[in-house]
Length: 582
Image (tube, rainbow, N blue to C red; front, side, top):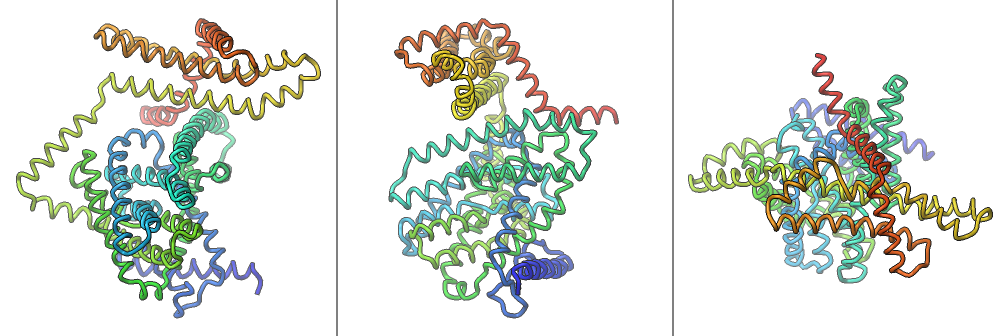
């Protein structure tokens, strides 16, 4: 039988079984995700009642595409701007949940007699929740617009980012038997750098592209182009050592800021449903009954930890972050499962020979069980919160109300704090842009220029051109780093008048920004000239002074920033304009 026939017959079996089971689940008024998982088990090699899938490798590849589309859809529905608006609570809650479950998982592994490395891997796996499952259940139960779902989505995004870091950290630890702090720090910096760069580049070009070509882009072209961009970012993320899921999410979040974001979301809905179903069916195929019967005690312990202990810690984390009790309970119940990243972490442990092979199916079984219970946990979270809250003592109720009120007051941003955050954000973004330009020039542009002109002009003049080209490219961003906007100047004047301490802080801040600008220029000069360091510093200071007093550089920066902010707010302005017209 040909390979192509295996592929088609497996796909037909998966979709037909999923269709029949989900019809039954709809008749029973149950969420569809458990139906997909059950359908996967029924056509898996572990169940002999029905015909089984012949080539699991093909199914795995299709499920990977399902993950990509689900994460792409998540990015379209949940942009980076939304992440930063809700981020304060979610960062605190995610930190408590992740650290708490790593600790609980490690202790549990030790009590089960696992090695230290296996216990560490167990903690990492328990810390991750299932982004795909939760997205699907929220859609089915129409919960995507609820306040708690926003909190959960940000926590999931942060978990996925932490999972990427954790993969390197666990791999390094397994290989060397100790933490490599330097490797972890480099990975963190690389991740932050590329996230900011991707977002800035995407916002700089895509909104304008869609706006200019709107007349010539129909639904078919938009669908093809957006999916192409998604897979392109997935390939780039993979090339740079990040997960495919992160690449899909980033591109979705960038497209979400364009005027076509909502239309793209509607266009890919059918594709997302198709590949998402294949992913959930593939999860059910991993359900090995013999493993469950052999290690049922360990599986139950891990499942209970994920459903109850993780649910409690997640609820406590959201409460500590200052959210209302009902929001915290619904968030905690939503996160109470072992996510798909557990499969990846487990496979790393087995491949590095620091985890016994039988642990992998144990984790998969526990994950499938907890994924199966997730829709019911999410559904009954609100009734549970409504039932238990009146049973608290008046003292506990008073404490919860007072804490929530105080936490909300702390989270309220003053005008001053908003400006400080804005200035810091601009400083980070501009630094990333400058570094990216320098890296591009050092690696690609300058070698091309040098080989093109070196036979026509002397070597020293060629070096001068190699400095002048990138310097002209980063000059407006250096100006932005030093000066800022008119609002910043007004803020500095206010701080200067307030107190002596404010003046010292302001002077320190100005010196820090100037030193950073000088540092970038020194890096550029040192790359191509072999002068003494003191001469390079003097030249750098002179260049910075010339750039600072240059009206042309300031105008270029103002124009670039106005253009970028216009693109960033284009979607909101378009929505407001349509509302005014109606």
